[in-house]
Image (cartoon, rainbow, N blue to C red; front, side, top):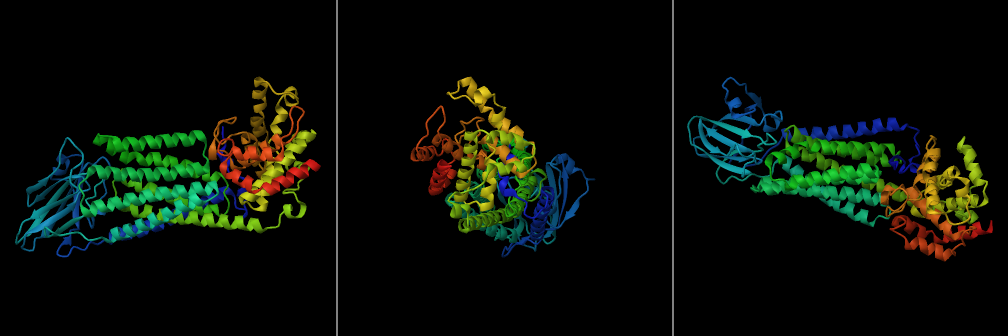
Length: 611
């Protein structure tokens, strides 16, 4: 089974000496504190909201009660609770009905009660008389988002009673008493939502553009993923704002709006899972469930099912985010990658909290928190990208072995044995066969060259090249009659020979060192093809990046080296063969790096033929 933990082990050297478990705790704590800080700002906003009405006024200081049915809330002995604003209403998901009551001064003139219903069914009573009723036992939703009810002229206070059949939220966002033509201006919360939404949209488009232009696959995946999901969340918040402040009575648009929010959350989790290479089966399972979930939500005609899916999306999303976060942490990322990991966890928490609001019936305004973290997360991706870009440029200017010796990586394979412990004896057996020694040495040189031109630091190039020396150690477990056969292998023999990848993984995975962990992953995956037609069927970016590089080096040396059962290809024929199989056999990203390293590959090719 593909081991996603080793996707980026070489680059994960712990420069600070802090254990991964401690880093996880620190990372999660920082993310939680960051989220709580923004949540505190949000709470302050929601409790200090205002709407400018001109000749109208917002009605607050309501009393409310909840119940399972109209009968429950008609009970004269039921207790009412006082709230300063509607956002303070607390209710169980089992309570479908909310009753609000309030006495207001009519100011001895006819007024109009303006209500945004969130498509909840309501009835309105004024001084005991029913003046508006949309509650229907056969359906869950109302057809109107916005209603306007006349409040009669009176010299005494007027009692307003509103009963809400809350399909999935108790919020009736605005109660405004004013003239019939009263229009609602932007609220404090809406202003913040609009600004954050615009920033999210702009940064998301920039992230997609930078991702497309990036030559590194992991940053292409990271930036495009956060960009697309952020832009969809921007579209969601834009439509959401447009609907509620232009009073568009379209339940279909309302459904589309939340399908977009679901898709944005899914894409963020999907791309992060893909980036973490969480394994073919795991990623395919969560992806299939997510696509099916959103499709059914968007197309279902039954209101009960629509509400059920909206309330329970949180459970699917939470499982996906937790799995992805664990895999991210276990990758042992670079020090600067923890900026990204911290923001990712904070984003996960904020998006999850947003969807929890539909499960526990709280305010929609948690969209502010989610938007804020989309912005922070996108900026963190840019910072992570800049760190890597600068590191790559630095690697280009550092003095390397290639400049002093004419060979990219001048390392004696026998020097590796002291780092391998008991496995060193097996590795020595591999090296004792002359053509095996030449092969693993050459592969390590080519791996160094490709890594170097891909932008890795000199230290990372050396570590990867050393780990690649171990890629064929599993051949020791293949019967001698097959391993040493000079003729072409039969199909049965070839199937046995293919097992050397798994044998190598099992030998090396017992070690705890970074070298052996990286070597184990390379050993198992260096015969995987980018199109998925390799030994285990792993494909694309699910293949460990160091295994992808080793695969190119392994094939190039194999076809350009002479064996008793075959002649060597020329350098140009071998080089062109590799280039011509970009996207099928090999990763197109690393083929570009291979192409850039042609002079060094040629130098290594010529030098190794002299030895």
